[in-house]
Image 1: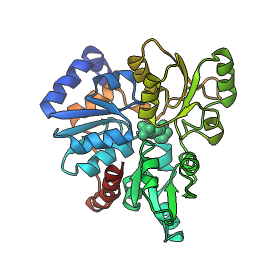
Image 2: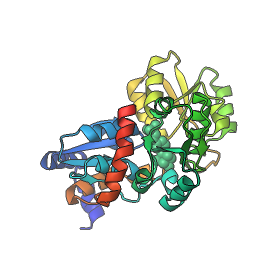
Image 3: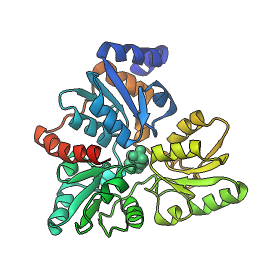
Image 4: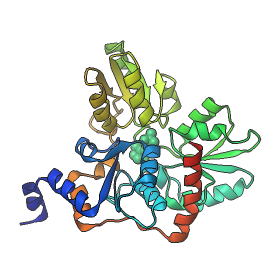
Length: 315
Ligand code: 13P
Ligand code: SF4
């Protein structure tokens, strides 16, 4: 019997829960994971909440259902724990668009600037940064930086532009973007707004400026989730990765959530191809095999820990 045939015969959920006990593991999942993974996780959250949970956990093993930079952050915070990622190829276009050697040159060109870097980057880039931030903590962190300190913000230009507007700080931006958040079709969103005139458009700040200017509310994944619970409307067009709609429906089952559509008709580009590399099968296999694990050079991990801890302290 091959692996696929064997997998079809086992109850993945039951086996994952069994392995979780055996390993004394915690399963942390991001909102963009497939619904089944979110449902089996011990905690589902945004990047900041997941980093905080990873820092606090007493489990021996961290199983990270998210993308590589998130699992790396968990490993940096827990150098002596085993950190597993179901698929090591689960990257991120923002992290890939900001290689450490180019980032180092960027820093050297602006030696007087403080480097505030979005958590969506590699451990090597974190090690070269002064402070890490997430979309839910960036504004608060920037507001604590003295106004005469110049700032380099990397690697998401859309989040950077949004933060410049919100904070009034004139930051130098790295020119990167998220392939998912740049895919939404404003034309199709306007069509949806015509069909659903009461629906509010809610968007993640990784979306382009023109889309953000149409939005009724802008926030990180956790802030979007909180907004739909606190707000009185019944219907929302959701301009972020579609996986979060699972939690929105769980939180507010009587409300209507419409995933913002991508421009291209036939693609599911509003789903993150990296996040969706993780499956229940791979989650089970990584726990069974204790592989693939996140391994980091100790010197990189030590350097990257400082700006991550600053983020946690400042947010
Ligand atoms: P959040 O920190 O808002 O969860 O965002 C993570 C991410 O990758 C957005 O694309
Ligand atoms: Fe990266 Fe975008 Fe996927 Fe988030 S949605 S992990 S920013 S590629």
